[in-house]
Length: 80
Image (cartoon, rainbow, N blue to C red; front, side, top):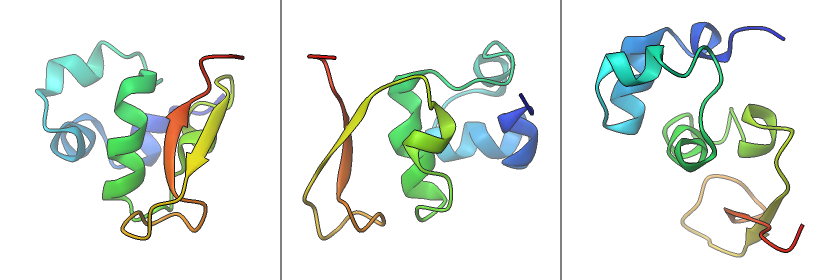
């Protein structure tokens, strides 16, 4: 698995996307926590979807015309 943080521009860029500090991103060891995936998706204008960031998690989409993904806003499928 490639280091997603590196592909997104490094810890500083990802920290800015999420509104957090760089050491927090470094602590992810290259894999963003599920609660940060929507912020990354929004900041990358849908280029990096939650499904792409965390394919191990089951996501559902809620219609939202303000969201950059055509399927809508991502939510965790807690029933899965």
